[in-house]
Image (cartoon, rainbow, N blue to C red; front, side, top):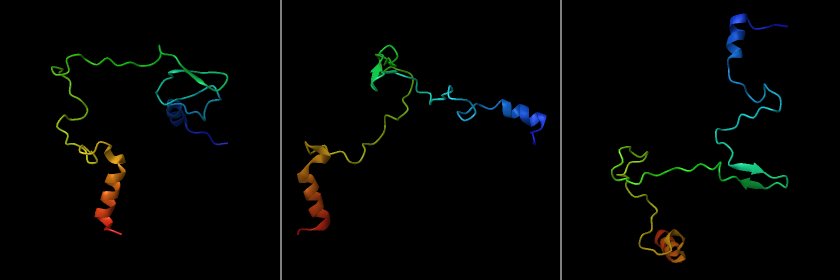
Length: 104
């Protein structure tokens, strides 16, 4: 049987393990961490000491770090400021349908 050369074999040994290279005891995960545990009846119990909490600074006006999204962002389309029911209004849907398709 053929084997890789010694330098190539050393390089292959340094690569990260995958779940296919190890028996059933290895679980790679996706860096999210567990927030609780599974019960034997199929439920899930949240352990609140494992839940991540983020502290928001109290003086955001004078805070020196910038947000990921700019504060100069324009309002998004699809906002319905004049309608109390928003986009779920049946009257608004029918009026828009009549405007686009004409009266029947």
